Amino acid sequence: LFATHAYAAAKGAIVALATTMAASYATQGIRINVVAPGLTATPMSRRAADDPTTAEFVRRKQPLVEGFLSADDVAHGAIYLLSDEARAVTGQVLTIDGGWSVVSAPAAV
Image 1: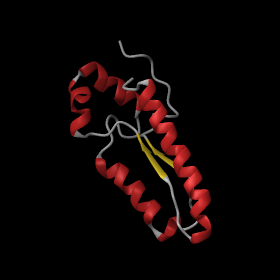
Image 2: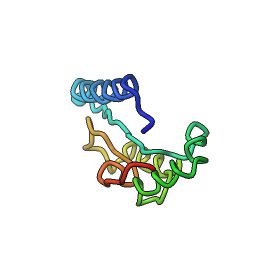
Image 3: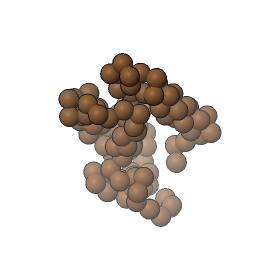
Image 4: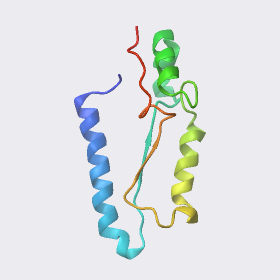
């Protein structure tokens, strides 16, 4: 759903770049992490949100938020990574997807 080969390759490249940058810059006290959001309510996702079948599929795939994430859901994770509480976190992917990556949902009808 929503992904193409090029999209998947680009996302994989971002993770690889962040991992190698984190290894390179950790000794200088610079932290590099990735935020990997699920489907988020944005102007780009509006068409999907307006389709009842797709909206129901997303609701089942992201049960923690019962649909699309808010921009604030994603921002809170980014704020954590920028905070002193994450001072020992580098080279990581913080997946904020409302459960998408761990929940199985039947294919959309």
